[in-house]
Amino acid sequence: MPIRHLPETMINQIAAGEVIERPASVVKELLENALDAGATRVEVATAGGGLNLIRVGDDGSGIPPDELELAVSRHCTSKLSNDIHDIRSLGFRGEALPSIGSVSRLTIRSRTEKADAAVEISIEGGNVSAVRPAAANRGTSVEVRDLFFATPARLKFMKGERAEATAISDVVKRIAIAFPAVRFTLSGPDRSTLELPASDDTPDGRLARIAQVMGKEFPQNSIAIDAVREGVELTGHVSIPSYSRANALQQYAYVNGRPVRDKLIASAIRGAYADVLPRDRHAVTVLFLTLDPATVDVNVHPAKADVRFRDPGLVRGLIVGAIREALAKAGLRSATSGASAMMSAFRPGATTYGHPGPANGHRSFNPGFRASATAGFDAARSPHRPLETGGFAETAQASFDTGPSATSVDTRAGLVEISQTLLQRQLGAARAQVHENYIVAQTEDSLIIVDQHAAHERLVYEALKDAIHSRPLPSQMLLLPEIVDLPEDDATRLAAHSETLRQFGLGIERFGPGAIAVRETPAMLGETDVAQLVRDLADEIADNDTTETLKARLDAIAATMACHGSVRSGRRLLPEEMNALLRQMEATPGSGTCNHGRPTYIELKLADIERLFGRR
Image (cartoon, rainbow, N blue to C red; front, side, top):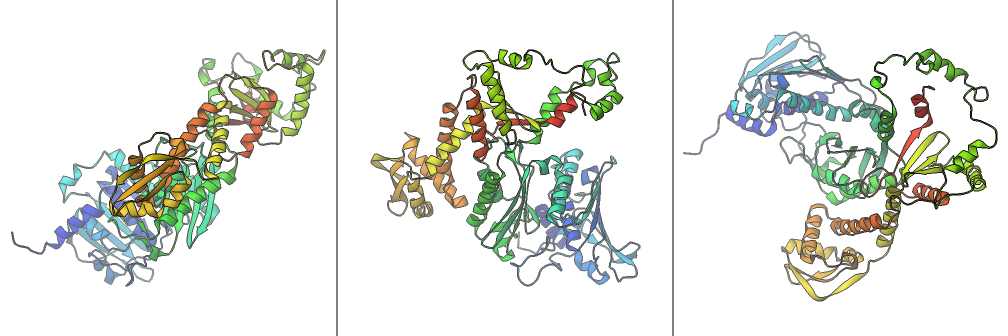
């Protein structure tokens, strides 16, 4: 078959196969056009998961009548200057509208601020109609019907209506986080509407938009990020370690306002949480990277979902360092979800008494009684106050103290008196040990329950890490150097990091153009597969320009040692030991979770406890 020029319609359909993967891709492209036009209000309506109908309307600047026909032609755009490296808009290729029109029935209606009336143009399967007058307000409305009707084979690869609608909702939320000053509305055929009111483009306004998208729990369990390094600015919020998810869908990343799904950023987030989250848990993050457009390439993927950084090591180091520093400065924090789950476990349901109303007429279930009791409660006049004769309270407390950790009544009273000075501490004063594993502590306004094994495991692990990384690690000399054959580029990269690797106890040197000679290995590793270790390090350096693989292996050994060397469950602790553990937790970064990512303590506020007993 001779070489020939493809028809314009077929060219657009080929481009649509790259740009338009599913209905959510159409919504993404149309939202980007609306935001580039300066819209402050965007409305999205869908039907059939977006396959039957997608309508996106905005109040942006609109398209002039003499440019509307150009807008549906390939490689025609108003967003790109003569420099491809200076991209300051979301769209820039000029492919979205003609690609969508080649596989659907597309109608565009637009009106500029100065125009007397709107104009309209239609495309059906790549066939463009003439521009004609229409009635519309200022802005642009794009209607897409029967998506992929011109390429029926693509319809076979679409998921169900619910899955496609969910993907569209995710796209709207992902873009909305980056533009808090814009009002977004998404409506579907089931009358369900997602409304994201506009706020302001300030840190508080952005956090309010994040709460709209991700729920009110996230701001309460997050830490602010604000860091700058060599012209690259990083802002946003990341979750505390005890607030995590089973997948990475709640990780949002933006580069110069553009939502991206970048492997480098995802890897940096995993690296930052490596010590505090298990492999099957993922942090919740919203990160905004701002840098010179010339130092990042957004033209590497048709859907503009991936980017390439000129200095990936700088970006990765900034993300990892900023998150770790923020986690360390945040101190000790427990997730509010733990207290909520605990409250749910304690709170009796409506079926406790067989019906949701008052139980046997008891006054504690009477809302009026609860209100009066809360307002005028006086412990001194209460008929249910504790007995005051014979020192019964102290004697009763002492009766629980049996076994190796028992103390006398006088010692116990002294402990109570001393503990009053500790109530203002974050973890308060130890009051009891339950089931030989859980420490119950009291603060001025809350009840703390600590898992002693998990807490001490984190403390031992942090101490081991400090000892490991504060000085060069001991190494063991190999009787015979092991020669590892590698591609020449990998060998060169490893040799460039030889001094860093030596700090971890790994001694390497070049052995010809395509090999590495390993003379020493870290003593902590014992007998290890040296060749596999070196190849893993080469891959890590090639991807991220770091030596985190070796550090991760050493940290894993430290975590195992900490797990087996910490206070075991079932060991009874003296009051002094319990308080010492609490003080160490307060002074140790990351002690809110153990090495495996489990929470080390749960905090239950006094107000929540009072609600359980009907006092509030």
